[in-house]
Length: 281
Image 1 (cartoon, rainbow, N blue to C red):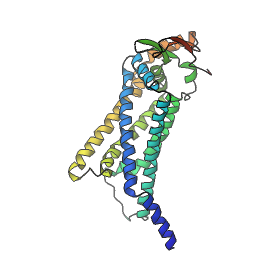
Image 2 (image 1 turned 180 degrees about the vertical axis):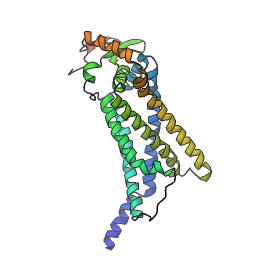
Image 3 (image 1 turned 45 degrees about the horizontal axis):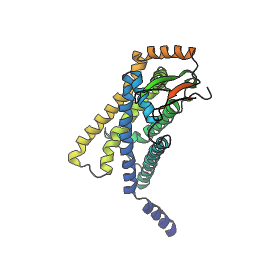
Image 4 (image 1 turned 45 degrees about the vertical axis):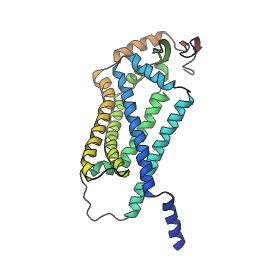
């Protein structure tokens, strides 16, 4: 019995609660900043189609690509894994510390987000996987690979051919199911961020009674800002038809001209080469 207690105590020493909280808060800060940057980048959807297409091209052609891009993706994925793992460990630790529920348990209004964090986190994680399959891997829905062609993108004053990301977004959000799922996921993300950002300051030890209300308001404003920014994109397509005329025009062009081989002027080498961007189509 004593040996079992010693082993249990040793496990807790390996990763103390404070370390778990710091890891969760640190990974959370990185993800919060990424979400903000991702939203601001996506809002270029409301500019000319070439704007977000050029933005997507630059993201996929960073110095040292494709290694750089995969390093960034791996780092962000590691942050997600660490964030989820620390959350699970902390929840488990709290339950072990209080194995029996109170006979009468009351909840404050602000506790709702905290009580739903595990479930909202899992739904958001499932959405992230779907989002990557839809826009990064381009396998959901299946007809993406057959209908989404290339668009001229101006990079360093040169015309390149690249995937028409604007058309992909319009195509995806024209589906009510996908748009509604996206809106629900963003609402949960807003709620998750609102509680998470406020709790993050507490985990880092910088929140006190004086700043508690102020930080809560700041976190709420940030969460709502993120929701409005992300939600405005599918809402504009689904309810106002933004970009659908452009998509119809492009689909008519792609139906006439197969996009197997396209002429590409390399921005760095400054010479013309032929590449196959739609292998397997």
